[in-house]
Image (cartoon, rainbow, N blue to C red; front, side, top):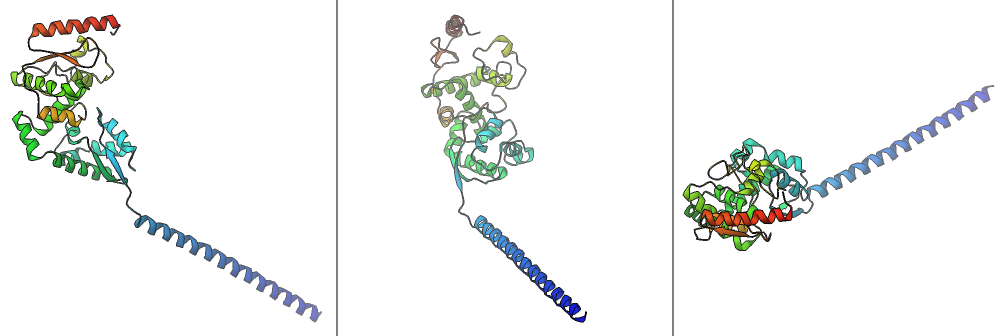
Length: 288
């Protein structure tokens, strides 16, 4: 009986020892896993901190609205369009940069810039403000003053020129025409501002009902320039406003051949003939 008791005790001792060894082994394995995970996390953190800066070439596109701009820029940045729009509508931030929500598009100069992909929307705004300040050299500011305009007003008029024509050869002529109207105290009566006011950029024919749209952007109803740009203008349109063609034109109408170019006129009688020719062409084409 005693020998059986001793045998059982020895078995139990050996069993517990093996069990403890398994526990020790399991603990050792767990420790190794945890240490390995920590080491891997450390390696990843080091790589993140010391990674080569990833830059992207960010081009400011010719777009009509800030939501459209946010969408286009977000395709190249870590920030999404909602985050960019939050910055674009941050009144305090915009005000600190010298703009408001209506004039903000005037800050965006349509060039290509190299930025970090993970740049924050706020820092992007600060960067673009610097680029705008650099663009408006003393020479360009002098050219703006010669036309009786501020840089923001140049961008606003350039945006109208941009939407009026895709023909580079016409831009300076159109800029000169609108400057002539401004100097004479005439309303600009620019169709692109009406499209912007009604919020329908697909309009192929601006009708009388559209001309009555109650909006400060409607230059048929309001004198002077609209409150801000109706799009981000191209460099060609900005240049056209800074160096407009000298002439006496105060009227323009799209050509009846639908080429996208215009007939220009000095007198109302000339303009009415051009307008009638264009209206006849629209009717013939079934454009209502």
